[in-house]
Length: 221
Image 1: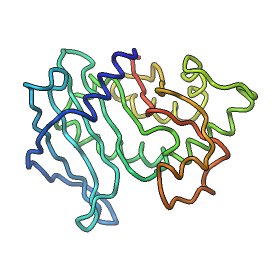
Image 2: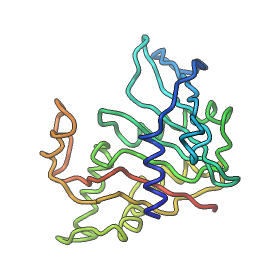
Image 3: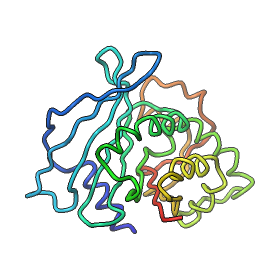
């Protein structure tokens, strides 16, 4: 699984690709936001894993709103679609799930989400609502002990994140199989200032989960 995760992260962050100017479908809402897509041209001479990528993001008055969905298709015939979630500033997890749901009709124009195998989120530190739920459930579950990677799936299946994701996946006959966070550890909230400047730490509990991102794998129902 570690090999799969490393390959996944490498393809997300280190591939060299050029943007193709293919924009602009839209939908949206009372505040005049616009959902836009950009198809990425993949250099297949350098990337033997990733076959296709399209980015979806929201703009308001010509400014991006900070959330981007990278939908990717790898070589292979089944379970070859995965999604990367990108944003610089913290967002509530419930908000991100809502925006993914909003984008699904447009994504379905380009990808068969019945072949979706994983979503990669930012580390839980970037989701205040998820951080609070983890904090409140941690003590009854683990006491003073440190959580281990192999315990993470069972623990997160007790939180609302699992319900939200399974509701998202239901139309595609999928459910959550596992959660993983590379280099998982608890971090004091004060350390968050090293990653995001000018953010109100009062929105956070005393500690949060930190690591290399939250990787969620799916399986058939």
